Length: 450
Image 1 (cartoon, helix red, strand yellow):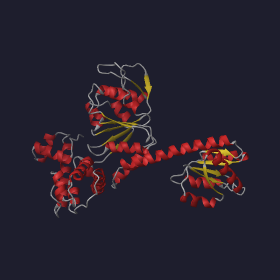
Image 2 (spheres, rainbow, N blue to C red):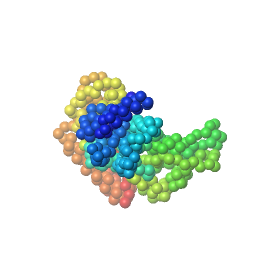
Image 3 (tube, rainbow, N blue to C red):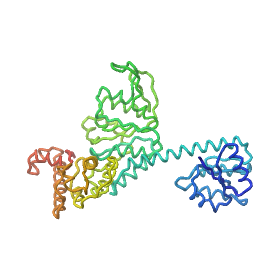
Image 4 (cartoon, rainbow, N blue to C red):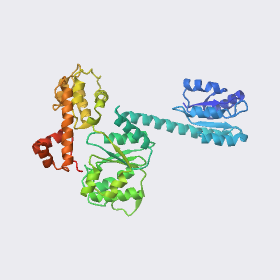
């Protein structure tokens, strides 16, 4: 049952008001007559609504209490209760965060309606808060490296923007996780999150998938389809791998972003959409634009808020916390207790380059959780599911890691100096082309042009 707290220095009024409201509307109202008791009362009890008088001992001391309560993390809605002569002060209180105000001489039906509306608002706010906490924990970005902390802060800052967000990063770095984190941090959290993988949809179907179609619009269209843009409502539509979108769809996406309206296939009517658009790609769009594979005007329209997700090898310090995090999630999914981890395992994980990034690490923990037969997790468990990983670290492991880092830098520089020509880079390095390609795959490199 919703509980209400009345804060007023007139004890007789508190007694009469709480009794009448309980008898007429069934409201459960606690009351206190001193502002000094507010903090203690709120820490001891949970309330869905606060009714606050502004005047105490003939002075507007309620303003300070209002401001203090509004700073609380889970502050319920506050309605100020006034006499008719204090309405200008009540208006001031609303500017400071009060939900509404009531005059003490208002008829009881109006008071009941105002309180019920406030309780409904409180209930919705609480449900959204709990939903946001639940989704936030599910799609948590984990890491302690400065680049990851900056990423988390950027997500927080742009979550409630309506602008398009462009997320870039290698395969497996967690671009969809970032998009879902934006959703979880935003006011759109109670609305749908609709992901669309642009690389997985045939060219002939992508327009229908995004914008919908009318019944009979083409062969096989036996019913009307809304499409992702309208299905997302006021939530988020996530266009993954937009660098693989066919050129004809690129032109239509650009028009939709500019006009904020969509048209189903087979319809002459246009519909406004309210969803926020978040896109992601593993590709370097600037390079594709230069090569003519992606529209330049669409690229600039998408690149409003750019978020780059670093590769796991760029924040190796987070491998431990990520391994522990995903290990806990994977064993929880398997309904088992997380075992201890042999102290030889972490150096192995730290020395590996993780070409599949965080996805590869997550897959490893899922395999371990599904097939683990008890006892601590050992290097043998890691190699069973990840044969490419080197044996457990020794005193020479740091040297191997340093050598790999230097080798990667040499190949990267050679590719850059040769304007992305792998054959020329191989000659410059006095290596076979095959060996350079093998090393590029190992280090997650692509031909870099000046």
